[in-house]
Length: 71
Length: 416
Image: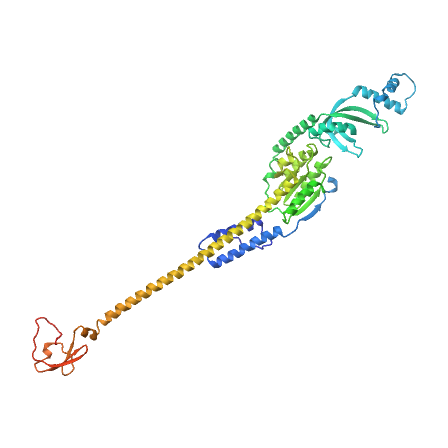
């Protein structure tokens, strides 16, 4: 499992990879309850970070001008 | 119409044929020139590339027909009167073409000088759409071949599409229906997109240059993750911008994936061919981008769902294990108790085997002599001795009347 990064900067690819790893670990029958709780907590955080970042902000529009000579 | 026409021919003939020393007036000369032009060049076909086009509200169309031989540029000013244009419109529509900058045309008409400005021009009367379309197709093939040769044809398709492209660069004509459709779809997705818009001309002179420059400009913005090139529907010649080599090269050179949404039903443009993802309309382009992000959201939700399932299963499993353990403990306890109990019983019975009282109940007795010593041998008793025989429920006293030693070495003495 990759070290827990600052969740605000975690990449989407990393988040998904970590989620998959957590899933693998959870599917292991030998996992103990304390570890289970820890993993589930982490997974919940990851899902929340991803969802919040995608859904929270409203559509934002900026404009950029072509340089004068290209117009 | 303010232009010259055939009604002046009679005067013109007279002037040209007449031998005179007198100088001609300006109009006489212009008229004379026009007579020659009309006679020699009436309804000639001419071909070239459409340059600058202007369409004033009068309904007439003025454009430059250009021949450019490596910088040696020759220009013919073409006038397409409103009436002629109306007559030619069905024919052009049928072939899905329009007079726009950059296309090659083969047109018919008659040259003349316009007296009011002294300008030499060409009055267009007909067009050969097959020339334009054939040229577009040939041009396209050449461009595609060149892009392939330069390794550009596939390049944008090999860029990496981000898992969650939220920052979108958009190249379009601001305020167009295409622009509105695209934005509406992004907005309705309720995904937090950031759009960086670069307003460009999407048709006519300079459009290809602007579109190409805008793609490069958006590519250079570090935050932009994907570039969308958007244009509403139009005729095949209106969309010539997107068959332009400059645009194709800009898309190929773009380090970020380019999504096109150039409205047309029939063909794909070269821009579409080289883009990472091509879509039939601006709306479809936005849908494709939204879909990419939604796919990720579904993936994350799916993981969350699977985690929930696994956790529930794990909890159910531990409950089952606890129940099992409790059950086993119960069984274990019963068995152990019973074993202990039977062991104790056994021990008790073993112990009771040694209790003299028990033995006496079965008929055994103990004989004591007068001194209270246990008599274990015939030799300890002689005739006349007083003995006390102890049995289970009491004692019997008696006197020895005789002794007999048994042949075996029996130690115990029996007496009734």
